[in-house]
Image 1: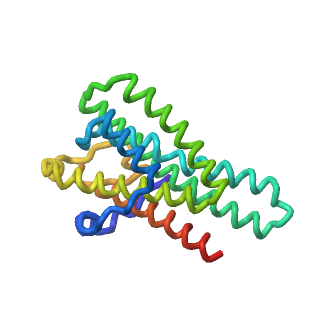
Image 2: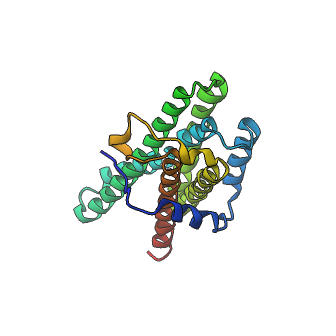
Length: 219
């Protein structure tokens, strides 16, 4: 079960995002976003968001992988190993949260009967996710804060994209949110609130990565 907090003022959180500048993205993040715009267009669409969510899960998977290796070698120091395990649990939670985003988006694409190109919307995202996983893994092994910074860039981009999508599509305010995943993710009165909540999730993931950067610098 992964139900998010539904008591926050989602409209206020959207305005907070829209009023805040985007991060100064690094070279890798800018390259990824350029690729997305070239292949999927600059317009924000459900299909493009779905590709983002396929990619969004993989940094957490790569960190989890490295952490499990670390636990294999440090279980003789149970207190340290426990801290590593707590990190694994947090990464798993964020990964699961991104997975619910992906499932809900796929459901909406199917309900709306949107036609997608098999190569662009099935094969290409898997290839990009595979490469992004290994980049995130390598950066983490070299210097964890580099991998966290790349993820913060990605999550900041996603946060703004979702909030701007709601702003640019006012009809979402009157579109009821119906989903088989309500019991798992949360029940929202409108689709606009659903996307606001997803955008807020991305901000929370970004903030967690930024917190880890700060921890690494002052460790």
